[in-house]
Image 1 (cartoon, helix red, strand yellow):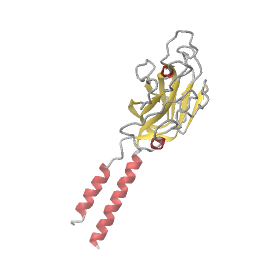
Image 2 (cartoon, rainbow, N blue to C red; image 1 turned 180 degrees about the vertical axis):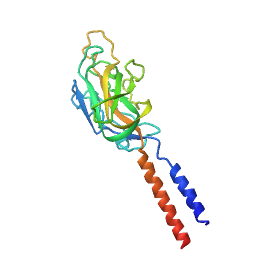
Image 3 (cartoon, rainbow, N blue to C red; image 1 turned 180 degrees about the horizontal axis):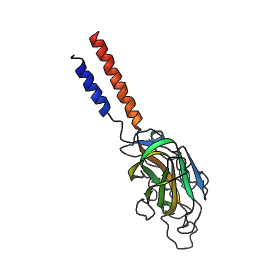
Image 4 (cartoon, rainbow, N blue to C red; image 1 turned 60 degrees about the horizontal axis):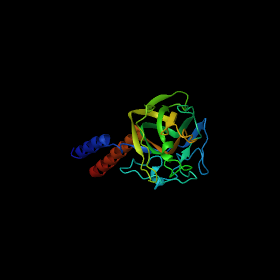
Amino acid sequence: MKPILPLIALTAMAFTITLPAQILVQPASVTIVGATAQGAGANDDSFIDGDGLSNASSYTTGSPVPVTWDTHSLADLTENGNWRSGSFPPGGTSFTYTMSLGGGYDVTGMHVWNYNATADNGYSSPGIGINRMLVEVSTNGGTTWTTAADYTSGSAFIIPTVNVATSGQTLDFGSTFNGVNTVRFSNMDSFWTPGGGDSYNFRKGIAEVRFLAVPEPTSVLTVSVGLISLALLRRRRSVV
């Protein structure tokens, strides 16, 4: 009967084991409606492709959430590593970023590296950084949407400092949204304020984004089953 006791202990341990609390999700693709990427080095994938991160290979889907986030390098006037829009009237942010996550994830938040070029035609480029947005999630590819976070009142995003690489900021949605496969940013505005005849007043930009997710319960179950199998094998050998 003695071999049963270790088996019970290992089985109990198997069902209490948890995987890392969160993982990163790198969007697989993005569709931008109502705006196009501006700048010689920018395209619609510029804020999801890892370009500009000091260690982009650590920020792919399934990577653990880092304790210390890598910085996003400064982008020069070619806009490499950043995405920025054309000009829009104040508050007239009718365009959307719609991102496919390449699978279903239990999303809890996101990490954003805001627009951080050194300068933009002589203007203070961080003014182009995202200041407001509505974040919505979908479990059916964008047929229906649920609000994950409403940052349209401002004060959520940090404006980057000119000529300093940024480690970005983590934003917690406050809830877990299960089975999310698509995320949409809309109702966006930047830090610019009107004045001076500046045609760049109402451009919007973002450098990079990753989503935070909780590993699926099936992953935990796989670990548990493996431990139980190991326990059974050891018990069998001890009996023999």
